[in-house]
Image 1 (cartoon, one colour):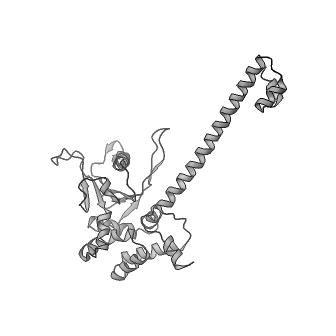
Image 2 (cartoon, rainbow, N blue to C red):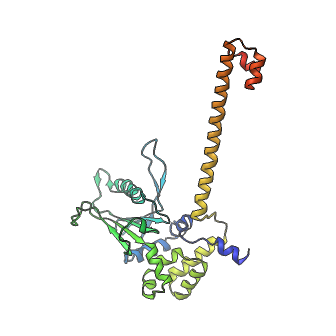
Image 3 (cartoon, rainbow, N blue to C red):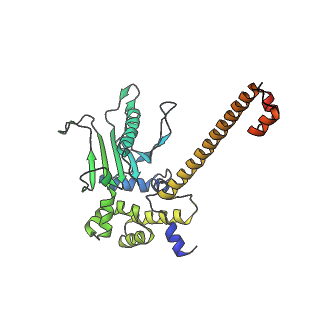
Length: 290
């Protein structure tokens, strides 16, 4: 494989499968523990990765899978981590729907509510300018309150990181901010950029482990597709399904129309042979219409 082709196919951690493979490993919790440690600025070491498939509530409900659902056992804190590589107008509504489902289940303990549970939703969002009129913050912190910070739900917070602003520190060579946010900047770096970051922080085990795993997944057939490729796959599949369905409807409608035409001609005593030639229906089928 040529270097040019390799460069073109190199997947960054903004790829959903890459992100989950690196930080959602049940056999090795180091990467997710270290990411949470740096995000929360507190040592997190005893975690449990929970089932990330949400319960279906009714027959019309589609299966929903969140990116990462992790519990800090020591602090009784639940983390939902969502990587939002693309933004659409109802992103926050969708993510809040996830929160409500998870929170309603996790706060129930036997026949009482677990009031000690802390629930933290972390969004790593690219494209926040579509969501916020004032888009100059590094992180947006949300709670449920009355506007005067009288909290309605205790121990529930949403942290949404402005990943575009944070990554821009890399391109402007803001060394202080790169130092502070290298654990987030690395997620959206290409092969050459990631190698440069790793060279800058050779003593940082987290950065070095991350680069090693991204390289490994890129050099092995892991079935990774970029967000653009995945969207193309989905659109092509839907198009194929819809085209088949439309053709079936057309064929069905056409046959019903021809059958009705043949029935009307029979009522007017038109010869069966003539009806068959006009409608392309077999004479046996026309005879059964009598």
